[in-house]
Each structure stands twice: as structure tokens, then as C-alpha cells.
Length: 361
Image 1: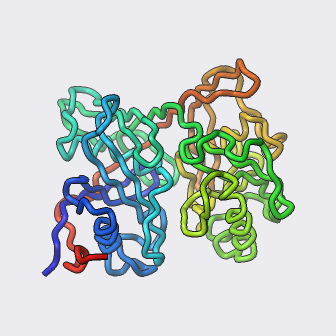
Image 2 (image 1 turned 120 degrees about the horizontal axis):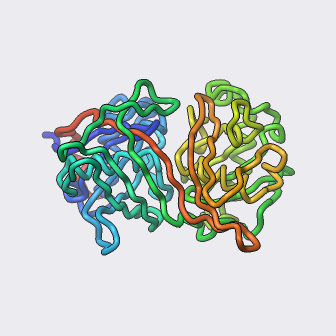
């Protein structure tokens, strides 16, 4: 016998994941996690599950009505690294978050309004809030539209995500090491957490130009070994503890923009080079630029004004973001981040896992 679990699968931004109502999963977290691993697939190719053998397609969203009075729904994100048979709940994911609004409407957690519907999401991983606005003409979710995002084919209806007070989401501080720059293994870096713990390093300092494709960088074993050494050392200094089995911090290699953006990025998540760039990873990279870090100084020139609209370049194009920044103090204070993404419902129904998923762990 197999166990049947109600689910939906969404493309959220440039990622893809399985979405579940918390009430449809075991209350015991260990049993829940084993069931989710079986659902996604435990082997590196995820042949025996719904995953796509890539961190970008091995993501989980668990959603419920919020336990907070200032939010509509709670969203717990889980990152599965193919072949590791474990789930990391420490980071957040802005791409999978994009699908939470449509999922809440499709599952009946939220009632759609005529025109657009806004859902305030409590991101359980970090305790932060995000307002998600979804197009709902005639009170129905629509996925068709003219909005395009680099790294995703075609166009779709826009999903506007407005993040509130992201600083220190996972590390407890915008600059978790207490300073703008650190040096590890002779490499100068900036460790920043404005929604996502990210280590920003100049591409040339680790021997690359920054224009390489994701496929090229994924084959560069020497580079990946160097980045992992730095990541393992800086992780505890970022208040993340040991990070050998965690998906954070992300490693972001930066170089001068080539197509009119703020900066050019190549991001490892954490061991595979991202085909584009994560939502919150882009926010943290832009934050390093606004802080005038030694790493980004001379490479990036942030716009003036409280509202800063910028684009973060990545292997498949660029990612537009708008940050609200208060620069009246000694250091900039980051108020909010706004991005426009798209999402699409791919499938819904019953997902089957082996009955052993409920056995004692």
C-alpha cells in the first residue's frame, strides 16, 4: 500500500516545488520530513520522486492559516539537495514564496477579491513578513499575462512581492560578522543578510572573470573547493553555526555589470551555480553594493534616493528589484524590498509515497 497526499506543484519565479497544506502532513516533524523526502526523491537523480535532480526543482512549501494576528498564512520553506536525503529549513526562498499567494487562493485559505488579491505571508523560516499581490479578475486566479522574467520561458501574470524589514532574517544582523568586510583564506569578502545570508566575493579574486556560464563554473572543481572552504569558515562567524549540511550561506561572485545593471553575479546555492539568481540573494547582493563594500566598490554605482530601482545581472539576464533605503544615519537602513515575479500552477491532486514514510524514525 502507498500513502496518498494532497499536493500542488507550482513554478514560482525561476524555481519549481511541491506545495502542501500543513494539515495534510504528519504533525511529527521527523515523520513529515521523511515523507517529503520520499515525495521528492532521495537519490541524486530523484528518479523515484517528483524532483528534477537540481536544487532549483527540489523545493518544498508547507502552508497553513497563520498563527500570527498580523498575517494571513504561514509559509515554511524546505530546501532539498538531490542525493543528500535531508531537508534544510534554515533559509527562505523568494521564488517559491511567489507561489504561496496563488496556492493560498487555490486551496481556499484566502478568498479571492475582484481585480487583485493581497496575501500577507509570515515566512516561518525567518519570522519576516511579505505582502503578495496576485491578479484575480472576477475573483479567480489568473496565470496568463504579459510579464516576463529572465530565466523563465514565455510570459505570465505578474505576482508582486513586497518584503518588509528583511535585515538579519537568518543571522540576526544585516552584517552578521559585525563588519562590512572580512578576510578568509586570503580572500576579502562581505557577509550580508538582507533576507538571505550571502557571502559576496569579487570574481577576479578567485580567478574567474564573472562572465562564465553556470555550466562552466559547475565543472570548475578547484573553484568550488575554494568557495566551500571559505563558506565553512565564515558560516559560524555569521551566527549560522556549522554549515556543512546547510544551504546557507550562498556564495555570490560579483563583477562589473555588462548590460547596464547594478552588478553582475554568479551565485552558488551553495555548491551548484544558480542558472539565474535567487530573489533574496539578489537583494543581499544589491545591499552589499549600497553599503559601499570594499568588494563591490568600483564595480557598482547604486542610484540616489530613498527608492532605489536596480537590476542584478545573472547568467540568463537580469533581475529587477526596488529597495527602500533610509540613508540618514551613519549606515544605511533597509526598509523594504519589492520584486515582480510570475508563478504558474503545474499540477494538483494526490501524490503517492511508500507506506514506510510513516514508520518510526
